[in-house]
Image 1 (cartoon, rainbow, N blue to C red):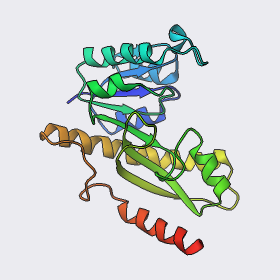
Image 2: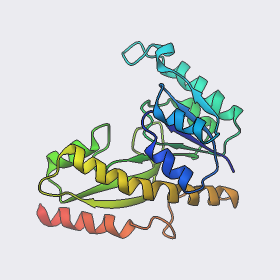
Image 3: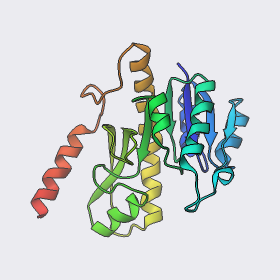
Image 4: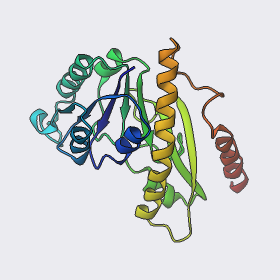
Length: 217
């Protein structure tokens, strides 16, 4: 089984995946970043599909053309599973058609609460007692795919967005590699990646969280 990891930044989750011994076959980024350097240091192919060649970061961005190139690169590397790890570009339908239910993402909140780019900031603004991270199947709609696993992180009284996000990242670096390993095992056994009570070690926490929210109302 071969794993592709999509990165845009420092590569801390990518490093956790390397340290966990996952079979990373290619690392792809939408911009020059430390994650690509880390891949090269580990002897793993590093692909740059630079957004700047597709209109950059404004309204002129050619999402369809960019996604087509990313998808072709992943197909060429013959990967079985794609893990987005802080990847800063939302991909269009073509990649989901090429890798149906084989793209994972991690989000710094307990979905379905606080989707979108500012999950940590939104959790703080809402005054919740706990937040965390979610690993889910990626879909065309951002942060809306089936949840595979979650880890809870308490919100402290003196938390800032930066301090809370850092503790969430610590949880992500543990939860995401283990979830990816499980998903690779499912694919290797000829099974679809589906939410499973046998995995998702924090499903019970999601139920407790809903009960707490209902009590506050």
